Length: 109
Image (cartoon, rainbow, N blue to C red; front, side, top):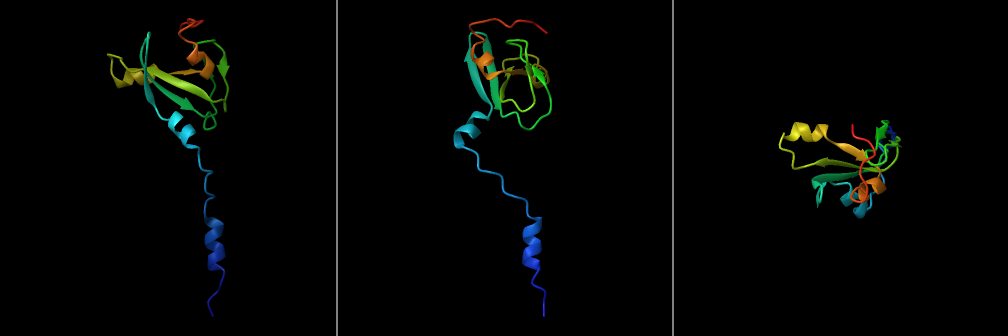
């Protein structure tokens, strides 16, 4: 008689399904183009839970710690090509990114 543990074994090794993401959250995480007075930018929101890095926000010069949701932006009208655009990516606090037109960066790097 065959053993009946095969169904239990299959479920034991299946990965748990990730929780479904909200459609609005998914759309916000997709890169999009933004045109403003300071040029054309490619902007992407990051949930912040996938990295253990710390970034420095160019808007307030404070750290963005691991696990903090933030905005990644780079100028998309760069004449130097895609390699330069990746090097020019900056990680901003969401509120600093939204207020960048009202205030200048505190420190140039």
